[in-house]
Image (tube, rainbow, N blue to C red; front, top):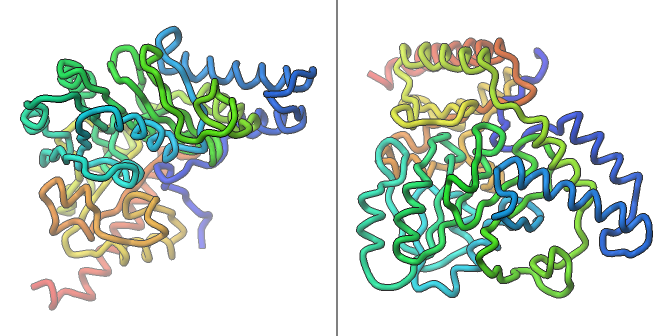
Amino acid sequence: MADILYLDHAATSPLRPEAREAFLNASEMGGNASSVHSLGRKAKLVLEDARNDILSAVNAIGIGGLVFTSGGTEANALALHQAAVYDYTLISAGEHDSIYGAVSGAGIVPLQTTGEVDLTALESLLDHEGRPFVSLMLANNETGVINDVARVAALVHAKGGWLHVDAVQALGKIAINFADLGADSLSLSAHKIGGGQGVGALIYNRDHRLKALITGSGQELGLRAGTENIAGIAAFAAALKACHGASDDLCSAQNSVEAALKALGVTILGEAAARVPGILYIAQGDWASNLQLIHMDMAGICVSSGSACSSGKVKSSRVVTNMGRPNLADKVLRISSGWTTKAEDWQRFYDVWSKGYEVYLKRHAKELV
C-alpha cells in the first residue's frame, strides 16, 4: 500500500510543529495559572498571551471576552446555556450535533437547497413577541457552505436577541472578524487547525453577562471552573498563528478535481453557495457512502462520510436531507484538506475514487439499468 494520504482535516487536523513546540515548552515549564508563585505567574502569562492572540486573530480585542473550554462542543454548550433567559430558541437545520444535543424544544430554521440558511423562513420565525436566542454556523462542517451571519445578526438584534455562531469549521480557512459578524458569541476548536484535541474557546460580547455552565471554582473569571490546560491552550494559539489559509495551488487543484468529478456525473453539495476552501462534499447516487469509504481506506486514503461526531458510525446525512436531497443522504463523501495537504494529493484522491467508481459500475451494471 502507498503511504497513507490524510484528507479528513475537517474531522481533526494533525498537530502542527508550531503547536507541538508550544505544547512541550508549556508542559516543561509547569505551574498552575492560579498559583501566586513565580511558576504560577509564568503559566498565567502564557494563558493570557494565548487569550489575547486568539482574540486578536478574530478581531475581538476590546469587544470580546474569551472562555477556554475542552473543545467546540463545550463552547457550544456554554453558549446555549445562555438561552435560558431568552423567550425562545431557534437553530438552523444545518447545525452540528453538539448544538442539537445542547438544547431541546428549539424551532428549526430550514435550509435552502444551496445549503445556506433560509433567511425568509428565519424572518417569519422571528415575527412574534419575545427575545430570541439563535444559533447558526458560519461554515457548515459537511458542505463547507458559508452563511450570511452579519445579515442574520441584524435580524436577531432587531428583536433584542442573542446570536451564537459556531465558527469551528471556518477557523483557519477564512478570515473571521467578530466585530463585523455582529455575533454575540462564537465557538472555536483547536484540533480543527492542528492545535491538538481537547481545547476550545467561546468568545462572547463583553456587553453581555455570561452564566457559567461548569461551576465550582474561580478559573476563567468564574466562567468555567477547572484548572486551565495551559499546554493545550498554548498549542492552540501557536496553531492559529501558523494558519495562512489554503494556497492558490491547493485551491486550483481542488477546483480541477471538482470539474473532473462533475464530468462523471457527481453531485457537489453546496456548489451554488460560497464555500470555505478545503472541504469538498460529493454524492454519487449509485454508490453508497460505506462502500466508498471502504474503497478509499483500502487504497490508503482517509476521508469521511460527514460529521465525525457520530461514534464512528456511517449514517445518512441530516444536512443533505435538510437540503432537500434525501436520496443522496447515504451516498455522500467528504474530502477535506489542511496544512499537510499538497496540491497533487487532490489528484491522487480523484484517481483512486474514479477508478473505484468505474469498477463499481462494471460490477453492478445490470442492477443499475
